[in-house]
Length: 225
Image (cartoon, rainbow, N blue to C red; front, side):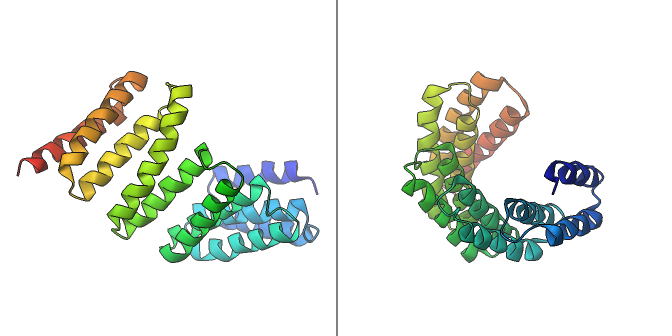
């Protein structure tokens, strides 16, 4: 199977948002792929992404789980690809608002990175941020704050290596937003101020800076009520 040709045509379909055609095209190629082959695993993962992009989370979930099962059968449970598949499955559950299973798969991904001594990696920070978002959706702000802080701690270390990385400023702004949603205005205001300092240092007074400053003013006003 010529995967390069498959993806070239798939990209054309996705560019014009021909979701139905793209789905049928992927399914056709999946039928032709060898069982438990790299091509079949790759196409199954692509189908998961297609379902997510086209707003079909209930279809994405079983496809994502099939990709995980296939990866385990193929001996990829210890490979970096497996963490990506776990993250994709968690995202599919999150899209479907099945937060219990989303958290379980995100935790599996976090356990994977910890086991691989990657607990302080960008990838692990991303999982902490994802768990934080799931907790926010359930209005579990203390849990959300805890994971966002863990992500921030990792990104702070990375920030020392690359001071121009905007992810640190974005994580600070997200932490400030969380304090605001949790009505911890006394914590939100200084967090916003720190985020603004970082954002303007890296990107100047861009749109992100403007939005963050507006949010800080709202937090400041709320703190004075």
